[in-house]
Length: 388
Image (cartoon, rainbow, N blue to C red; front, side, top):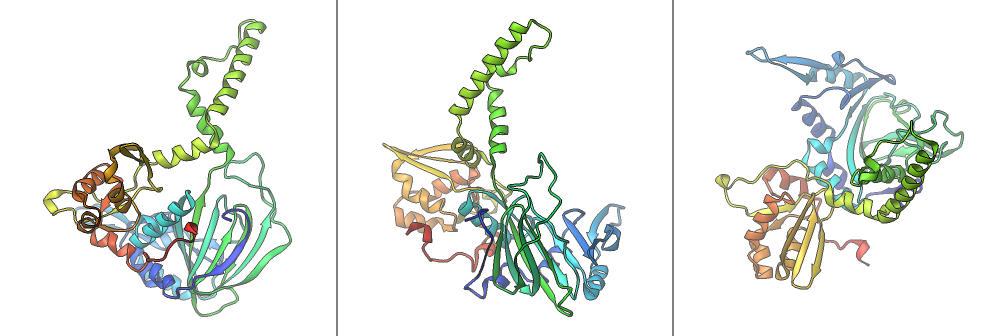
């Protein structure tokens, strides 16, 4: 029940945590990027360090300056005890990109993953709450946690009231070990630390689910209102009271009709279908033939079969194919890597032509070796429990 209640569990496949990320892999990702605050931060003794403590400017022979992590300084900080935070690791690492996309397809919500590497007996963040639901996966080492309930029901980043006082009752306090998973709903207070651990380290990933609320639906409706001339007119202020009252009644009636015409379900569906495709490497025939592809839309494409056609909606596109293409389309848009020749053999369809269209429309991307590495060891042949 994502977002409904606090829950704990564990990953049955003991190889999965290290497959997702290790401390050395994280440090390698950090070393090879130009990073800056607030995406990359460092904390010591519970206080955020100034960027000059762990970042430096690399100047090329032509005088170009690039802000990069100073690995020597970071090494000393990690040895003494600190916490490194790298937000949106899915932006840099193909494995985390694939994991977040899988979770987006499962939850129908946008997902990003932040990582936290804590060494020695360093403290983490003080007691706080997040404005989104999180699923925390302990990847390596150990860390102590404390989780409390919410002090304000469904708090938001932009809210009507502050939410500064945590509740007294503790829901759970204990240790997260490799493979442990924890779900903390939006607004639940929590903190993590290694102050009681001494030598060692902890690495965990926090997958954040940005769900849509009623306020987001209302904001979407406001944009729909711009389509109607009535809502684009200025509000009456200096005319007669009768004229002002007429406009108010007219707007109220029109707003009521707008709400009925565009229910929350339409808002959620439109959000999925219109979300643009994420970054990916474009396919260029000069570099070789299109042999393997994978669907990279932020949400599962909507595939509709009717009469003699099949329609695919995703990434702001609506594409119509002949009905006989449906089996091949479902394989190419399954979310797992597809070998074009195998799809053609199993469906007796010109899969190469279909794949070319899907790639050009940015629903699929060429499966490069780097992107393929993100799926290796993560894609299984097990049937989803949702199908039972």
